Image 1 (cartoon, rainbow, N blue to C red):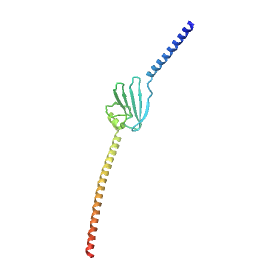
Image 2: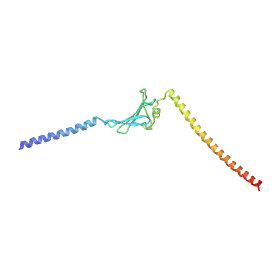
Image 3: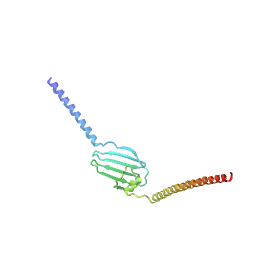
Image 4: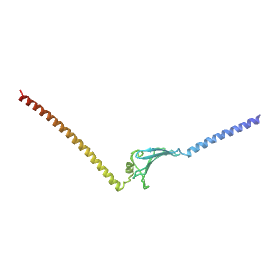
Length: 178
């Protein structure tokens, strides 16, 4: 009977030791393999991928699909809160961006401006033409409002003069016809 108790005790300890080692292996594996990256659509036709590495550094990468001035921006935030923003141009040039604006939500052009990526000459000219056209549109709308206001004012004057003239004509007719 003592032999049976000893054998059962040895088997029990072996099983308990095996269970502990499996938990430790699972925990070690979890710290070596970071959480999977998540991807979500971003503003300005972009995509944002977020991941956290084993040291706790959070990396958010925003990839622009059709911006001619910037291809991606990466925001790394360490566990202690240190934040680094790095922008990459379509040609592969990388720059550290020093801005207080949220580059994960701002337009691609604003991020490119903050990074110092200059627009191509043709694009600058097109943007200037677009700005001029918008200025003309704003002035036209403003002028149209002024003309409309003046027209309404003139119609009111003409209407009141017509009513005034009709009253005078009516009183003149009364004087002629006894």
